[in-house]
Figure 1 (cartoon, rainbow, N blue to C red):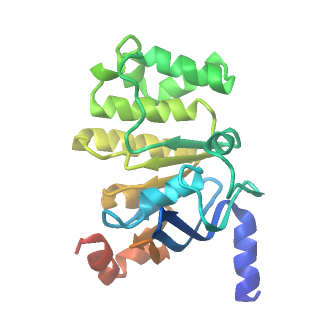
Figure 2: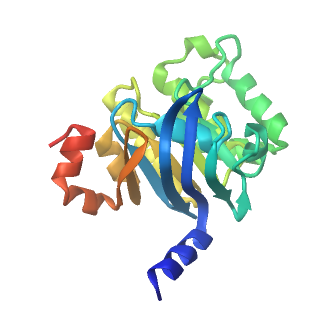
Figure 3: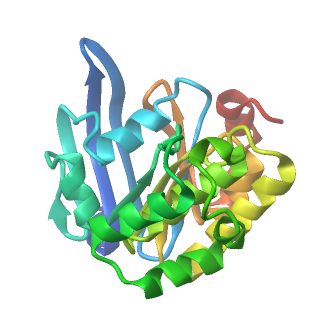
Length: 246
C-alpha cells in the first residue's frame, strides 16, 4: 500500500480527524497546519509548553474558536464549521480548563441539568456515579463547596452523561494534589477501557503517557512530534526542547 493510500485509510478509520487546520485570534495566527487523529477507543494526548496552541486546538475542534482553513472530521462528518452545541450533540463531550462549575448549583442540580439537556435516563447517572463515588457523597453540596478535585470529577461526570463517543479534556490534573491526580488518571483509564475515545491536553507528562496510546507535541502552533509514548521516550531531544524535561 502506498503512503498516500495508507494515510487515507487511517483517516477513514479515525473517529476524529483534524487535517491541516489554521486558527487565528484576530490577526494573530495561532495554529499553523495542525493535524492529528483519534481512533475509536484510544486516547490521544496533546503536549507542549504554555502557549503551544494546545487549548486553541481543542477550542477549534468544538467550534469555540473556528478554524480559518483546514478540515475537522468527526464520525465521518465534516464539523469544521459547526457551532459548539451541534458538535456536542453529535457525540463530543468537552471539559474546559476552567471546568465550568456553577458555585450556586448543587452537585445534584449540575447532573440533573445534564440529564435533562441530553435526555438521558437514571441508569446513565448510576453508571457515572459508579465511576465517581466521591461525587455521589456530595450531591447536596454547592459548586463552591467542592475541592478542586471534586469539581474536576463533577465536570467529567457531567460530560459523560451525554454518553459521548469522544471525551475532550483540557488540563484535568491542573492544580490537583498528587493523590487526586492518580484518581483522575485511573478513572480516565477506566473510561477509555469502556470504549470512549479521549483527547487530552495535559501538562503532567507522566500522567499523559500513562493514559495515551498516541502523543502529539505542539510548539508555537506547529506539530513537532506524533507517536507512541515509547517512541517519545526514545527521542529525549523532543522531550527536552518542547516539553522541558530530560
